[in-house]
Length: 251
Image (cartoon, rainbow, N blue to C red; front, side, top):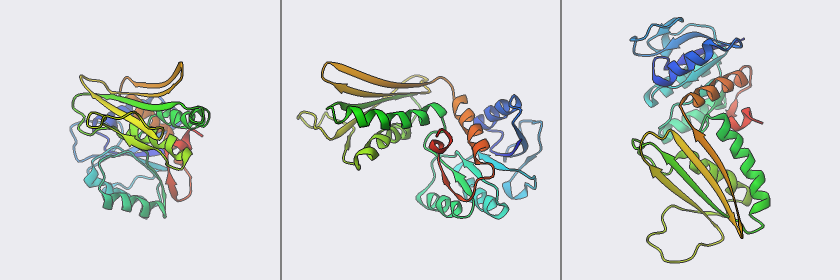
C-alpha cells in the first residue's frame, strides 16, 4: 500500500486524483492539503502543508506555484518523496526543485501522461531509423482556445526526445511565413493550433519520399494526467534522493 498526501486536494486535478485513488486498492490518500475547504473529503484536510502531520510514503502535488517552495522544504524535512505536477514555476523555483532533489526523491515531468511518455521513448527508436533515411520531421499540436502558451511544453518535449538522439543538431522552426526558402535538413517544424475545448492533441510526422509515418496522441480528458501521477507515486515510494521523470516510470 502506498500512502499519499494530496497537495491541492480540492482543485480540479485534486478531485480527479481523489476519485482515481478511491478505486485503486494499491494506494490510499491519508491526508489532503488545500487552502479552500469548500469540498468535504473522506480524508482529513489541512489548510497548509506545514500543518500536515500525517505519515505518508509520497506527496502528489497539483497546487499553485506560490505553494511549491513550502512543499519542497516540507518534503526535504520529512524525507517524503514528491510527485511535483504544478506548472508555471519560476527559474528560482526550478533551481529549488534541483536542490531538493539532492536530498529527497522528486519526480517532475513536462507531461504526466503515461501515453505521452511512452511516445517519447518510441520516437527515439523511430528517429534512429527514419532520420538517416532522409525523413523530415514536423510536429503539430492542438489545444483549447484558453491556452496562452505556444507551442505546448509537450510538443517541445517530443521535439527534444528526437533532437537528443542527434546531439541536438536540429533547429526548431515555429513560423515560415517570414522567410521564403525551402526547408532545411536540420529542422523540426512545430505548429500550434488553438480552438474550442481540445484537451490536447499531438502529431509527430515523419515525411519521407512516397511515404509518411505519423505518431499521434489524443487526450480526451485531464484524467489521464491524474492516472499518470498515481502511477508515478507508486513508483516513487521508497526511492532514494534524486531527480526523476515520467520516463523512469514507463521504462
